[in-house]
Length: 419
Ligand code: ADP
Ligand code: ASP
Ligand code: MG
Image (cartoon, rainbow, N blue to C red; front, side):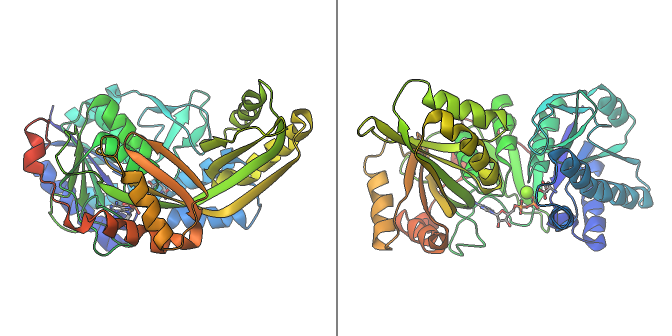
């Protein structure tokens, strides 16, 4: 069966006119003979507004009730889009995460998809019905509604594409592809015709909002290409797919993440089991740690710093305060006005001097580096949040990304291209 999964983000279904446009687009694809599964996000800023409603009631809403609340946003848009298709004479049905058989773990607000029961979706597709699926949500084995983390509709789409063995997974959004940096921050940024899974995983994980990190991890694991396209034109966008190292391309993209905080436990007696105790306690509260730095012990005492997303900082401090006495730590300090800036590229590991160029560029802008981490295809510096506006364009210029040439034609020879 020729199954195509499409996902439309919040801005693309931001008002009734846009929803009608999306319905017209869907019908155009359907006319080519494709069986369509369409994932949609909540309209415009609906999810943010729902978050504000909860915050007006309590500073610490329970994660279960947040999922109950936030999942309603997507239900509005699926119903409206399905009506728009029915109005145009098409067979369409809206389905929640639960009705789509999207089974997750029970980790509210950042659940992971465990399984998709695709059989009933496939039989509906065989009847020629367009399936309109609520993004970002699923159901746990205990029949609890869960959500996949902000931006998680992309993940619903790539997971459905895998489960349904779709021919294509198209992510429609408000930019015309993946750029060398956020085009709304760096006007000189260039659109990439293609990007490898590995680079996109790092770029998304380091804060490039255009794709939810988990959506790329799933696509990479099952080798399903993702096409990121504008919802306002027929431009081909960017294909995320199997990569091949290209000569002369060291850095592919630069990204920032302002949603960062650091907490340090200072003066801990240096003995085996300390790190295990700290990180088990954090994991027990579902706190994801982005970066850990342990310095060299002095006078038998050590400091451990960790970087978390800002949403976790309060609970991380609470957890560490509870551990402080048994760890015999001196004190706990935190800083929540930090940001990460990252350079990503498959040439980093094989090109000497890239890190030095990054650090020199930040130094020239008088930007102090708080923490550094790296992988084979990424270098990340934690800096003062206010400095990201200087850091990202400066790094973009240093690595000459406005001139990056990277054509799809070169890449497809060794890859399964889609579409
Ligand atoms: P949607 O609502 O369609 O899911 P998002 O707002 O989540 O859209 O993602 C699209 C946004 O991602 C763009 O408007 C852009 O500002 C941002 N973005 C960040 N980094 C990049 C990048 N490297 N390339 C393209 N867009 C990016
Ligand atoms: N509506 C959710 C959010 O705003 C999910 C998504 O848009 O992907 O985060
Ligand atoms: Mg998004």
